[in-house]
Structures are given as C-alpha cells and as structure tokens.
Length: 532
Image (cartoon, rainbow, N blue to C red):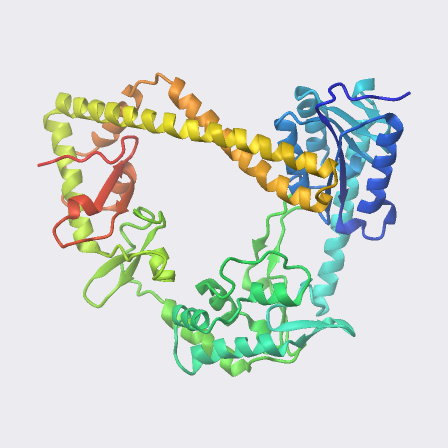
C-alpha cells in the first residue's frame, strides 16, 4: 500500500542523525540513513522531499542545527510528515522523544514514521515505542559512562584529551598523544610572550600591535591551514584582548599537557564547566616547548600584578548600569590617580568603532543623586502632581511608540512578503537543478532564520497595537519603590537597584550639557526628567 501526502503543498521531511559514539556503526552513517529513507519514501509514494541531517551530534541533545531547522519549517506550516530510520536516530532522551511524538507532532498535524521500529502515527500508538525510547536513553547513558571512563584513564595516564591542537601546535601524524610545533603560529605566540615579559606591554597594547601588523587571528590562521574552521571572520586580524590573555595564561606552551580543565555534570547536560585548578592533571614536557617555563612564570606574575585590586577600594558604584547611547555597549570604569571615569567598551577595544563617551564618576554620581532627590521630593510633597506627571509622560510615550510600531510593522510585513517570494524561488531553482542542494540549504537556512525573526517582530508589534493596557500597574509599582525612601544624601547601589533600570551616556560636546548627556531610565517608567 502506498501513502500519499495529505497536502501536496507540504513537504515530507527525512531526518538523519549520526553521533561520534556511532563511529563504528557504518549502518547508521548519514549516507546509509539517507538511502534507507529515500528508498522508503519512494516506495510509499511520498513526494516533495526535504532532507535534514545532523552529523556528529549526540542524541541526548535536541539543540541540533538541522533539527532546529526542521522545527522552524514545521512552525511555518511547510512540513506534513517526518520520517526517521529508527527512534534512536531521532533522539536518545525518552522524555523529549515522547514530547515530540506524543504532543508536538500531533498538535502540529505532523505524521511521524520510524521505519525500522514500525512506528507510524497514522496507524495509531505503538505500545513498544516507549520501551524502545527508554532503551535508547539507557544506551546513551551507558555509552557516556564508558566514554567518561576511557577519557579518565587516558587523562590520568598523560594522554592528550583535546581533539584539536591549540594555536602554535599541530598534530603529530606518528603519535596521536603528541603535538609538533607549528613554527609559523609559534612565532606569533613567542612574540606575544616577548611583548609581555620583555617590552612590558599590557594585553590591550599587545592586541593593538597585532592588529596594526595585520597578523591573522588564531581562528583565521586555523581556517586557512585546517579543514574544520570554515567561516571567514569579518576582521581576520582583529585580535581580542581575551585571545591574547588566553595565550599568555596557557601553560601548554611550556610543552606541558593539562588534563581535566573542564567537565560536564551529566550525559544529559552538554554545558561545559570549568574545573578547579586542584583537579587538573599536569604532565610536564610531553611536547616540545614554544616558550620557557621561566618566561611563562614571569608572564603570570605580570598579569597577576596588573589585575590585582587593593582590598580597601570600594566596588564600582555604577557597575552594570551604564550604556553607550551610540553603540549600545556598556561603559567600564577607568581608574586614574585622583579620580575615576567611565569609557565606552567599544571605544576601549577599537577607537575607530565608537567615541569615548567619557564621563567622570564624581560628576555622574552628583547628577544622578540630584535627579533622584528631585524625584523623591516631588513624590513625597506633591503626590497627586507626581502621579499625574507620570501618567502624562507614559501617555505621550505610548502614543509615540504606537506611531513607530505602525511604521515598523508596515516595513516588516513588506519584508515578510519579499522573503516568502525569495524562499519560493529558491525551492523552484532547486527543483529545476539550477542550484545545488548544498547551496540551496545554505541559502534557504539564512532566509528562513530571518523570516522567523521578522514574524516574531510582527506578532510583537501587532500585540502592542491591539493592547489597551492602562498604566496604573506600572505607576503603582514605581510609586511603591519610591515610597521606600524619604530622602537620600549619598548615592549607593541599593537605591540604584530599586529605582534605576539603566543610565545611557551620550557623547559630550561641552562641559555644561549634562542634562542632555545623561539619560536616567527609571524602572517601569523610562527616562522621565524632573526639572527644578
């Protein structure tokens, strides 16, 4: 018996997954799964086929690129049937597999088929499917346990646990537990350590010199010399401060192997945690050293000295509150001999990317304190006028937001129509073989990603325009927060956390226009300004 899709405008998704733990099982390779699925689809009469595949990704996570692309296509109403080779290829977490097969797919009218497990939602429930899912999860747990045990034994005996050598080294073709020095990259590593230990340059200065000399970053270098770093960066020689710092902190450049620097808590959780240094296993002199141990120790002393903060210094008052009005990034504190100031982080990293937005802490603190005191004074002495001013401000702000929302909504709706046409044309070109499948998947993934973002924004603006929400709840929350204080004589972080959402700093034009430079956004309310 042949099965035909219920709606000829919708596609049939063939999904394949292959994990590194399946590397010894050729029957589960992506190529084999593809053939099995295509043969099955042809035999059963499924048309308008789309193929999705995640290669080298564990079944214990569902955050897989092509699986997420499949979900996007389902959400967009483009898929009617999902076919996998067996339930283990779909996933190895029984709870999540059950969620998709028992709830998500039926809710979205998706027919689900697992060929080798005789699962077909159109035929009704398969009573053995839950047991197969539990077995698949048990298999993942047992495999994870065995892999962890193997890696632990390997790490304890001095084997290299990294799958890829760090910048400055390359694999030894004759010994998988040994790295060879990559002289071209190693010269850059030596240069960085010399800048630090011999010329006493800080990480920011070193990064600036490397950018000026157009030295490719480690990622760009590996992209050119290996087959795993594919994507070209926009600025291939823009060295980040953290990249320089990571190199200076890496003991492996002494030729040592440091194992167990990170760990995972569970086979179900793929987040990587940093291990405590006392849990490291260090094996000295396994590889040829790029820098000497003495130079490495000297670099650590310099880095530690530069980062040490005197214990009597107070925490930064405005930490996490200050934002640049132009680039949107945070401002960070810079400490001078007699005062402290704030500078835009983007400017600090690249002076050509933004302006400094420089402002002294004492000036900022005085301004914010005066504004909050005026707010408290009006709230306490003129409560009716205070609430009325909040209401009027929010009404004006709401009216302005509605106008902007309508304007943005029209643009978004036009863009959505354009994307629908583009994606439709791409599919037509693929069917007519004007473009390759690989090219089609690359292009359509990007456009569908943009399309999803556009749809989300459209829904947000439509909800905003349809809402008749009053401002009373917002005002009541703010008044309750303000009423905790009669007056304040000194600014502290408790007051800021209660009343302030963020403080936006504009670029200063002269010394007297701080009312225009500093915009305080109060919680729930926004950047309302109280005049004297």
